[in-house]
Image 1 (cartoon, rainbow, N blue to C red):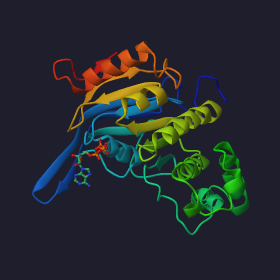
Image 2: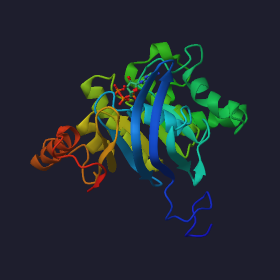
Image 3: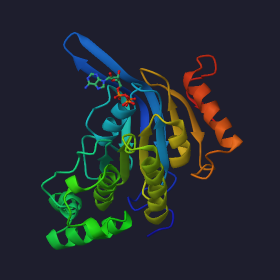
Length: 272
Ligand SMILES: Nc1ncnc2c1ncn2[C@@H]1O[C@H](COP(=O)(O)OP(=O)(O)OP(=O)(O)O)[C@@H](O)[C@H]1O
């Protein structure tokens, strides 16, 4: 492969995912809810890109639009330079809820099934790929277990293994750890980062936790309250799970808080 060209044949200077001036709306008879307005950002290969904002600012709606489930009212979403026109196996979502795994399938079947039905691999190869990713999330011993015998954290690990087994262009995560207790949440953040070091997937991650955004992401889009507009985009690669208590980390968190919520301190679309 040419060193200056990505696997998709694009120059490496092109973003993997481009969200350009995207306005999203929900329409019901006599009622329009504008979820986001004129949102733009670029995600590059192997980015851990965070959408951060208050509840109701349209983060999940943006993720759904990137997933191809909601067409933009205005603007464009491009993946590898091509407009997103619907859902596809190149974008897989991990949700917050623990019930995203069919309970009648074993853990291995849960992970292998989407790979198999997408026609990418046969039954045997799909099971092998499932075992590969289950090993990466530390669940090899539970491959033959059923989801109802697993803890919330373990179910989320299965959901992550299932998503990664599809080897998507972008992994979409919608508050995947929000329903976990604080200790498990921290452990899962740690594991996600270790997994990223290993696999180097591209991540688009939604959260309303400033601390989680700083720790998990290398870049963060800050969205204003409803309807979500870009407040700022910041780099966060300098922070990790060990930065937590430091005065610098606290100062960065406070600054983000001001950018998110202070009307006076918020210039739309600020690049930091
Ligand atoms: N199916 C829907 N029909 C109508 N309005 C909706 C629908 N889903 C979401 N909304 C509205 O769109 C706006 C954005 O919602 P969204 O769930 O994207 O926000 P969010 O930032 O992800 O919030 P949270 O952090 O609470 O999940 C909100 O005002 C919400 O009420």
